[in-house]
Length: 350
Ligand code: 5GP
Ligand code: MN
Image (cartoon, rainbow, N blue to C red; front, side, top):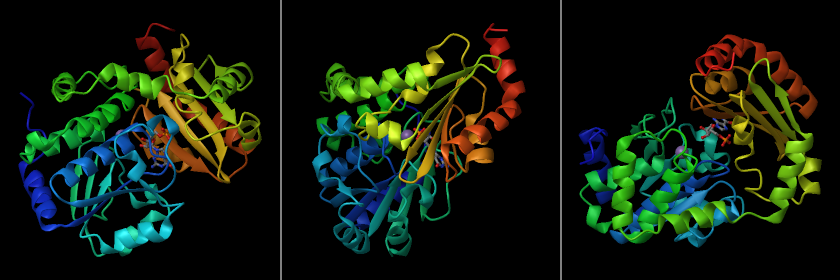
């Protein structure tokens, strides 16, 4: 039995909005990850199954290791097909905002979405949802938006309509947002849901293989360079920092998704519990932060790098150059000293 965590009124309101709508657009955050694509495709497949004209619009392209996913070839990349996307947004009766909290996270798609007369529903597990939607289904206690999609479809009474393709997308999102069920994944009901997805016919081992054993050679060459030359440790803080400039990335023939998971790698080193990754891309520096235990990265990201996110996984951005960003990071690091020390003590490292 799966608990009814999501408020019944929200479920019924969402159901009513869906029943009233014919054209539905699903949108998700920039640089979409497995949960963004998984939740969006799962919901799109479900909506099509119940007869809706549903489409997924993403701000920019998504990684190659997600391109095997059912209906992924139908995804409209805003950067590439702006006119088609704008038309769909304008004609939509209902827009779902999945796996993000504020419009800024969908980059240039935000303008059309904000302008659209469509009703808007947020389904998300990030903190602090914005106020751009008519209905907000925000539950940070869930490990993935994909898990929320499973729960919402079931609670609306459509478990039978949830088919194998939809289940594959939900599983992919649940798996990727928990690092293959290695963090943020102690919720017992996660495994009840996985069990239901397996009963729907998914091959979870094959999905793992398609997502995690599907990388390019250049990613591994870049990883080697990054680990050898570009990973700096701050043992007194239990911290690590990685930086990659646009020049370095292009030298290794960087393609979207090639640096996926890099930020987590230093955390595998004994005594490292906080990791930062700075990547120069698209004229700015994209910042990623990860931590273990009680070290809050989201407040750090918000305070110093114009970002936010979850406690143990957050991000931000900067328009300074790489040297300045690294300098700012090293200046900011002492502000986490007490938190880091507490966690290092708890883990018996100091
Ligand atoms: P990633 O490091 O994988 O890009 O992002 C990890 C998490 O940090 C995301 O799921 C998202 O919650 C948050 N995040 C990443 N970039 C930003 C940003 O620029 N602004 C905010 N507010 N959150 C971000
Ligand atoms: Mn997510």
